[in-house]
Image (cartoon, rainbow, N blue to C red; front, side, top):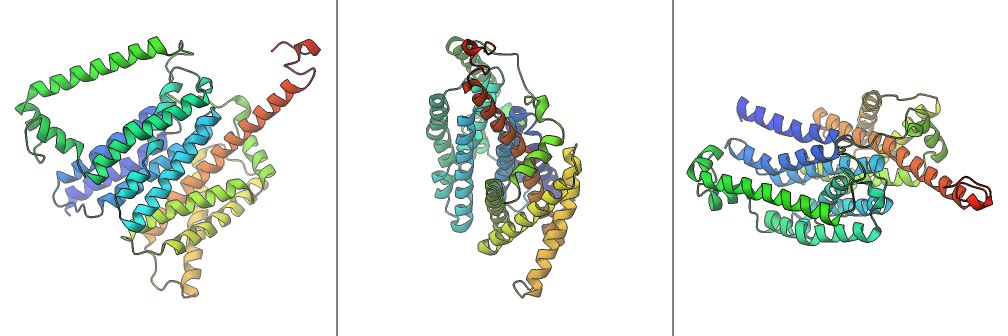
Length: 400
């Protein structure tokens, strides 16, 4: 590839790595941006024939998992409807399992059997949050929405992309605008400008119909339009809740087991993708588990020594260095014990250090918020249930 092609690849990959970092703070626009870039990146690459696309499927699925992982972690921080959160957790790990099976088998049917329902369910929840308090959603609504997205949206979409292997942009150019898939969009629009006008009218009409349906059927809005994620309550801000929860949970906890599973799944997916399927998945999974436990020990020791992280960027920078050292030590032990003879390229080690650091640090931070909310909710429920508590107005308590 020439300089131009490399520049295109770097810009697209940088976008797919950078845009997901905004999801915890601007959920809807950030995730929609990731979704759009995911949809058009192959078409962008196809405009430059020198860019090889042999491994595109694995690259695409791996980076999908990357931004979906950050979206899932953001639910720990932002979501207050517990039924929706548990549904999102199931949908996310179900898709993760499908991605791993796809990397093992290279059967496209795996991506149909394990559809990416989590992505659109995430959008559904955050779209509700734009104008309503999502706590008001009933379990029936949450389950019904997930089922409808799975059956009526994701299954047809997964079949279109992975089984029929059709490209939406190629279909639009060839079937609607009547030009070749390789032609540019200016050529397509010039050939049939009325198609673009019809698409704009249809889009506006669809948005108007959806808006009217929502206003007629849905309850009144709870608040104005909220683009940014809800700010954390005052009692969840600062470093003290983080240190306190880490001290109470310790190292060996259910949170560690989930982190190990998440790190192992991510490492296997990316490891198989970067190696072209030649890497040993069990070895990658075991290495990721050892790494995650070592990381937990180091970060727990730092937290117990009173080190507070006021800024997320500071913690990410420090833990990136720590985790890079851990990975280099594990690699050296592998070669010393004869498990691996060839040295892993430093660029790959650095990438895995970034990937695992980002996921683990975000998980640690956001799970503190999730757990603190749960403890607060239990405390509030206990207070309401106690005679004389907030709910016992007849027992001498304050009115609810």
